[in-house]
Amino acid sequence: MASRFLPAVIENALHQNRALRRVLVRGAGRSRHILTFCDNFRVAGIGSLFLTGTSEPFLHNLHQSGRAFAHYLRNAGNADVRLSLSRPFFDAVGVGDFDGAALIARHARRSWAQGEEYEEDFLFIEFLIQHGVLAAPVSACEDLLARYERVLSGAEDLRLDVCRTLLQADSDAFNQALALFLSDRKDRLEAQAETTPFPEEFLATEWNFSLEGLALARLAERNGLETEEDYLHIPSLARAPDRTRPGDDSWMEVD
Picture 1 (cartoon, rainbow, N blue to C red):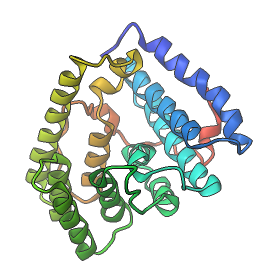
Picture 2: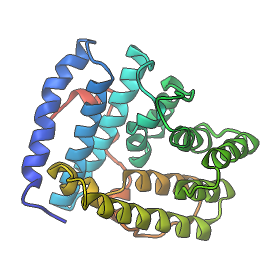
Picture 3: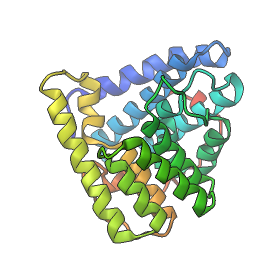
Picture 4: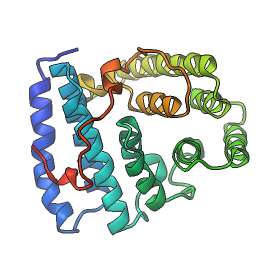
């Protein structure tokens, strides 16, 4: 997994965050600042996971991303942050910080930004929030998935299949659906790479790591499903429990 670029990728991400932290602490940050800040923590964390083969820095960085995003939403508002762009929600869930995920859910923009985001992208995260974090009634979650299916109008979206298996609490079906989702992700990235070059930091980190997949596996475990030990692009090491219990303001400490 290691890459000769990983040390530079990690240092560049954290270096940029040292400057961004000053902007965010002053309250001068905008959505582009917080999303870049969280992206950098994610890149640094995945890079550290691949480089060192240990989970502690990775889990810490994902926790920082989720908490930084929750802090921003609580203090700066959510008017310019569409739910489909709220990847730090996956960071919080992926590290098992469900208190942080609940804070994000409480302050996030929970209405579809029509004309600004695809409705299916909004519904995917909204379902995970309602079912996986807020424990909404089954009927409400079923209604969301029915809306999701209508929006697709017959088009394929493997995320919907994974969501259905989570709601059904079917372990075998979940593992099969997640495996298909991850395999399809790999195929789509490879097809895209034939025409569009990816940044080196992406190739060194998220090319071989699925943040959404990690979050889905965490939610399945929380729901009592029996998950596989390993999945494509979800190293078992990344699913280790976070025993460090960082504070709510851990995002202010950029090493």
